[in-house]
Image (cartoon, rainbow, N blue to C red):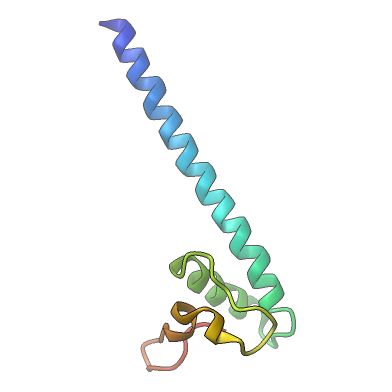
Length: 89
């Protein structure tokens, strides 16, 4: 009985650790892509914030360059804010 409890505990902890590491890796991917995308932004903090949100929602797809090229990532291009304006920089 105790052996199965510890085995279950080990499996659960490994699953939690792997999902935590994947989220850290995903954040690092979005951070690097958004730093490149927002390199010339006038409001760097705001650009990084919204780019990060869009990157995560769009499975790490961020258009290349600092402006335009949004056709590379249709999800990124099509996200809208509450005023029906483009959400992603």
